[in-house]
Image (cartoon, rainbow, N blue to C red; front, side, top):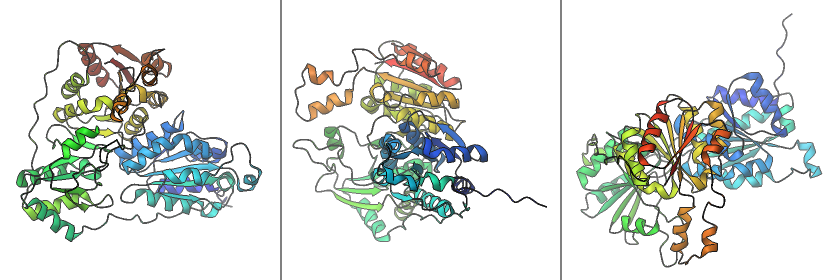
Length: 520
């Protein structure tokens, strides 16, 4: 007599259904209420399980994975406090419009009434950082809930979906496999907007095209954008913060709108028309006394060719066709000479990157105050992908690089990491070591929250020693090489550009994680 297979519980039905629809990785920091998922992950062996020692590592790693894999991972988080720990980097992921499905454990339904120590409003905690939130109701419908969330995450643009998982629904028998749910495609191209964009480009007035999201990830779209620019005389810019840009030799070198308010206003001054493609009108990060929030001139006629829910590359192709612009292969940019000796500065780091970065590399940019001077070096480097801090919540770089390396194990990853923000999720180095991730982390050690010193002046303050004491990373100094070694990542400190050049070249040629503390 043939034995019947053991019935699935709710947790197993969720994992099997997600995997059948292409989910291959789970980034996790589980607790007691998620043990049924830990057991199901072990028994099924269907997903790669990646442990983060802090939930902010988990959410950022899932973000980096999605940016490079082009599909969602699932995260496994513990109750409202665990989700709260993940929230800062979920904010960044949401601003990056990446797809992600969070599974957040909760107390068993029968246990909620007793106000146990970890009881909290899980839905309330999740809502501000999610585009979709649902609580599982029973084991039989649990997988269907997960598939609904996955479809939301995969929509255009990518979204953060969160499924709350009461413990008993996970361990109860009666789980049922669920079929994939259709994903909403991009919004159709608006022909009226296309006509208006053609009119703007043919107006003879000073025009800028600001393009974001999938346009910057599509080499063909970039070539068409350059053709449009050369045909019409329009300028092309990217937003200040971008989830991913394809950069380097042979690719259109698009500049970014600067972060500092005065530089941003100067950059955009004088434009009469602006065409937005998969982005929104540029806005200052913060309000400042006597300065506008919107960065384009008040008199600028701004139109949206494709919204963030649209197909930017298709819109660019249609626009190029209408005005008779052909794709252009970008001319290589002459790199700046690499100094043979001297201090390490953002400018000299940029020169070293242009020379040293291997083809196919992935650059993670959380350089913060140094980013503006380092970024141009990528334009002259070998072709690569450039991922940046998107939502402004610092502490993303180290774990973002771990997720990117897991998504693309054949591509070397370079992290440009400010020292202050590194301390938010330094535990991500341990995950890099455990996973054997091919990541070189460069700590830009200026021993300060330098970006905040600039912001202090922007609001008109005249800082004294107490104010500066809150922005300096001294008393005691931080030893990143020692901290990295304590988590299984070898490293070295360098104080001269020649040492930095040699250390970077050697680190990127070797597999596995390595940390360089660059004293700038």
